[in-house]
Image (cartoon, rainbow, N blue to C red; front, top):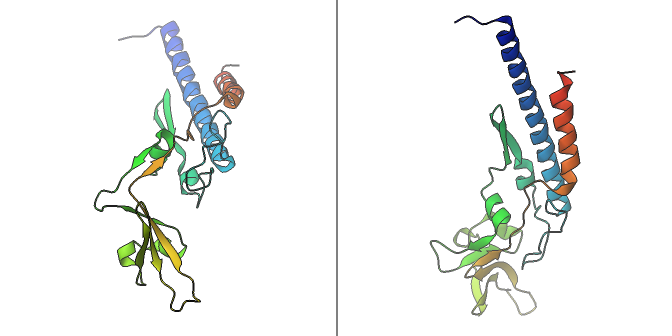
Amino acid sequence: MYLTLKQLADKMAMAERQMNVRVALEGVCKYSVQANKRRLTRGVDPDGKPFIRSKWGRGKMVDKGHLRKSVSYTMLSDNSGVVGSNIIYGRIHQLGGIIRPRNAKMLAIPVSAKARGYRPRQFPDDLVCVGKYPRLWLVKPGVRKTTAWRFHYMLVLKVVIPQRRWLGVGREDEAPIKKIMVDKCLRRIF
């Protein structure tokens, strides 16, 4: 098969445009990663609304920063890319849902710094269950009447996670994304 000079020029121009689209999409993905990380830190969704406070207190979803650090992008092809996270709990925060125990009757939620590293059965101290159903606690009892109990776990039947859309593109992102697309696509043409 032979190509005329015109056909060859058309094919080269098309390849150049496709290369520009890939560069532009990578720029948009990089911007989106940074924008989503900033929003997680600020505790707002893509539309700028604050996250719904959970029953346990905080509205921000940043504890140790694992979710924020995990936000990244992948180019699937020359004309498509995906921004997301590989952290397992990122999905339930994005969509909301109910967490129920699988292998036990109740969920044990750590409430002390010491408890965070252990499951209740692996905890180094002896724990006692106190309270009235449905509010049960695993505590280390005080040695004397003057020594206070130390609360380590709260026992619950389920945890309801409200939807907190943390991943996405908001109105404030439209102008920078348009600028990236125009700059990157037109940079090599003109």
